[in-house]
Image: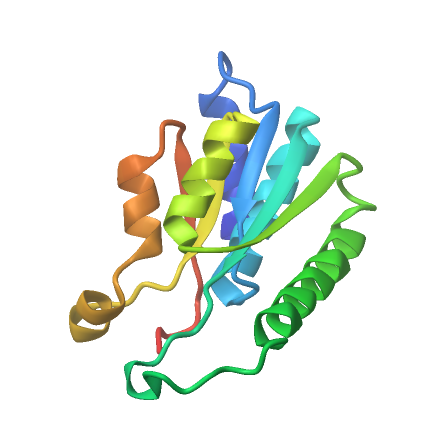
Length: 164
């Protein structure tokens, strides 16, 4: 129950702080599930508004230079992302009635920061994959960019799964 322990500790440490608006970034993976669970617990304790955001990037491939992608490809990805988000909101709604969602296409960390600026949350919650070494150097770390750039406190949650 580390999630409950952490939520309780945050509650005790934040006597003077209340989180009325919580923004949760999700990629629908295991780390995001853990972060979402923590955010839902915090939202329930603080009676907070919970906003979920999922940003998807249009896949690009250097070797496809000049090869056209199907015209409805982006639409299909967006529809699948919205459907997944709607399903997630339905699951959360019984535990946190004030929940809404945002689904966007773009560069993940810049769109999440834009959502922070627009929605003015008191806390940003996100999962981290815990990549190390070469994979982290090549893929970068969205979580690290958000922790370094966010104007609001950021709570990260690791998954218990091994990073790929």
